[in-house]
Structure formats: C-alpha cells, structure tokens
Image (tube, rainbow over all chains, first blue to last red; front, side, top):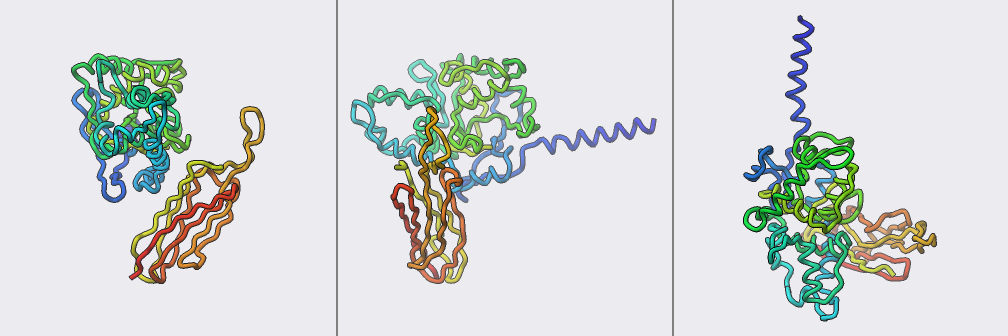
Length: 280
Length: 109
C-alpha cells in the first residue's frame, strides 16, 4: 500500500512538472530595441481547442531567437534588400518596374497582415498578387512560387506590416475557402496518419525528435530557416510537413494550399506580423 | 563575377575617447569554394572574397585572409578601440579583382 502511494505521488509531481517543460519560453520579442511584438495572445474566437496562441519564436532556442532581435543579425534582411532591388528594376514587355506604379513599398503597410484574402471572387495569396501584377501591368514572366525572387518580394512587402496584428478575414466570401482549409487542418494525411492538429494543436511544446513543436503559426513567413539558409515560403513549409507524414503532398500554389494558408493564417489572428522571421 | 554583392556594416555613431566598441560587418557573396560540381560534373570555379581589411584614420585595425571554407555571406564581428573621432574604412577583395569599399564615421567625445 505504501509503495503504491509513493508511486502515486511521484506521478503527480511528474504531471505538475511536465507542462512547465513543454511550454513555450517566457522571452519577450523587441526588434531593434524599439518594435514591441505580440508573441502571445488570446486565441481568436473560432479556435475551439486552444486558449492562447504563441509565435513560433517562443519555441526556438535563445541563439535562434537572437538572430531575429536585430535586423543586422537577421540573415533574411539580405533577401529583403534583394527584394528592394527587384522592386526598382524594370522587367517585362511594358518596360515597368514595381516602383513605376507603386512608387514607395511602404504603401503596402498592413497589406500582408490581411493576406490571403478574396479579391474578385478568388482567394488570392501574396504570390498570386505579385505574379498577377507582373503579368498584367508589367508583361513579365511569372516568378517561381518558392524561387528566390518571389520570396524576396513577399518578404519585402511583408516587412512593411511587421509589428501589425495578423487580421485575415474568415467570413463572407472567404468563408467557403476557410472551411476547406479547416477541413484540411483536421484531416489525417499520409502513412503516419497525422493531421496538422495532431502536432500543432494537441502536442505543441513537446519534442518531436530533436525539434520543439510550435503551434505552426505562419505570422513570420517567409521565414529564414537556418537549415536551408534561405527564405522559405508558407507553401514550401506546408509541403514539408505533409511530406513528413509520408503523404503525397499538394503542389505549391495549389488551391488546396491557398485554402490551408487562409485557415492557418486565421489561427495567427492577433499575433504580430514577424516577417521575415528566423527559425531553426 | 559575383553579382548582388552588397557590403553592410554596423558601427556606433558615437563613443567616448578610448572606448572599446563592437563592429559588425556582413557582405552578401556566394563564396563559391571551387570544390563543388555542377549538374554535368564540371568543377564550378572558385569565386570568393579572399581578403578583408579595416582601417581607422589610415591605421590598420584588422586584416583577414579569407579561405574557401568560409560560407556564403561572410559575417565578421570584432572590437576596436576608438581614440578619437574619425572614419572606419572597410574593404573586401574579390577573387575576380573587384574591390568593395564602405566607410563609417564615428564621433568620439
């Protein structure tokens, strides 16, 4: 009897200690000593199973976190600079650059925080928007979805919204896409039969082999991933996750990933846009 | 010819005379090692920055010989004593003969 009691009290201690180990850390993200970011806030009303949402930054090591605190240290800024060069360079048959029409990229402040959104009856993500303008206004060839030019431009436009709260629209004409994305989020894929929710909702904070599982928030994309040493698009990351379930993945730029992007972005509503973030 | 090479440096604008400051530098450069092969199996020729020099008011601060194993976008962080107001001049030497230079002024009080 005594042995059983002791074992029982051990179990209680272990249970109490476990959440503390699994939680995101308590660090506060301030960029360039001036820009206070929201990395933790109440979950948006539509999320039924999560009370608090956390930026992926809170799940990373101190060394990785430090890279995002100062723009000089942030390797993604090299690509943002390249994006700025692209913004000003003429391309296509019309002899125009982005700057010919948009003049100052700062005018895009707030735009990224609301993407993806429905425009002219279609769900549009940032890559669609950029390639659409390249085709219609510039007469230029479309950029490859996860190519360096495209992601540099997405990062540049996204940076203009840094610090603003994510705020994608999920009702009205966005509702059917959002429902489709939600369906995908809770669908188990692949030989391992894992849904997004199995890791990023049920198990965030735990270790998946050597990786500290985050909530899979996409408020920092395109993200500089240290292991790939370049900017990674949202769809590239989706593809990577689904591949890891040993499933056939959807293509980057597919309607399925557009819908999933809308749904996952809506789970970040309230967190600061961190584009371009730095992750492991 | 390496394209898109862009030097950037971070130096405090002011310091007190004799203070030790931290300088950070980064230059975007592919640093092609000369060891890699392309899809056809041909060696990709070496193209790196082979030397990095910093001077303060004409006096040498550091002089680095850079080797092929240094990765893309070389980053240097080092400390320097600032005895007086002046100018830091940063110079990178490319294998192809290009020289990239940038400078920063610092006010010592």
